[in-house]
Amino acid sequence: MLRRLLPYTTVLTLVAVLWTGWTLYSRHQSAAEAERQSKQKQAEVDRKLVEAFGGDQLTVLGFAADPGRVSAGGRVLMCYGVSNAKTVSIDPAVEPIKPALSHCLEVFPKRTTTYTLKAEDGRGNTKSAALTIEVQ
Image 1 (cartoon, rainbow, N blue to C red):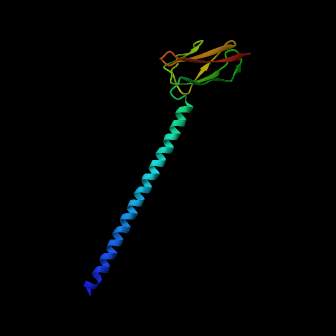
Image 2 (image 1 turned 120 degrees about the horizontal axis):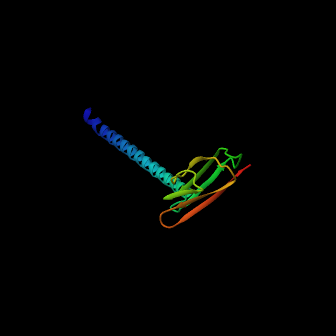
Image 3 (image 1 turned 45 degrees about the horizontal axis):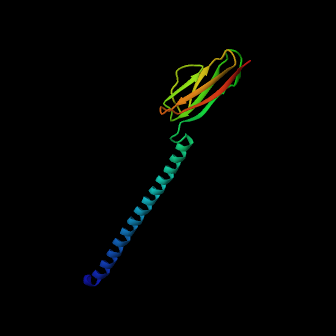
């Protein structure tokens, strides 16, 4: 009786092994494809982020003040952002500053003042931006 069942059990065992192998292989392929797509999407997000921050070019991302109108000696929050800069300065000087994607500092103008942000990339390229804070 055992000899009669042996061919059937061998075939069933072989089918089970093949089924298991195929299942493992297909799951591995699906996981690899999902990982590839995830990396592709992340690369696209990273590329867009780099472009948004000026790519590899010197860029003034922003230069603004809040509020733009104050009484003499009033507090103003001045914020700037630069990309790919080696040095940054504000004229008239308010305090030593460094290149940053986003940085804010306080100023207390006594009269209407136009501030100029100047960014340099170390290769001779410069960018600048200006803003005026009106004192009443």
